Image (cartoon, one colour):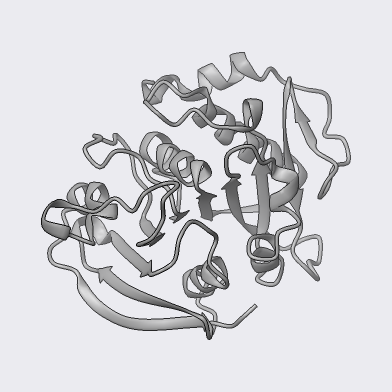
Length: 266
């Protein structure tokens, strides 16, 4: 999909609708024939512009799950972040190539939310889990220039893709024992391969071992960071020894760091 046509296509797919109707949490916001869910942060004053996290759900899930999920909305609502959770057609996403209408849909979700809430466009985060993580990668690849950070959990696109756009920062987590969206091991057992695409695009050098961290006692992350890439790009890769799941505290930790907060759990 040519980027200059993205919003023109979205206007055709989702024509201008009537004034925004009340929707929140499990009551979906309607856009044409599609929908998304929204969850406000705790204690919001109704005026202050909100950072946004656009989160793509996993296969055969819906956004209604994300706005109830302790490791997703539990993280956003405690950190002053507006959660937007689109619903995929047939409960899935088309992230396989650059002709995905779901990229345009994600962009329209943000614009529709901006009619309902004052949003901070300098802090738009795009997230996803499993198939949703691959969709978040696709969104960042095709429409990422306005994205502050990609937060991807256990899912990628092909590392040989040539992305026309990209976010300012990339944060990815993957389990070495993942057998659903297999850990994308590189040649010779290269465990940094899950972010090879962005390392090349950002012009990064060698990564730095940033040590180990935990949000809960039973799950440890090993972190590698590429800082000082061309154009001030930054990449963070967290690896754990588990399988295919949203790790406890991972999204919360990323938001804390991105928002300049002291990391906490939950």
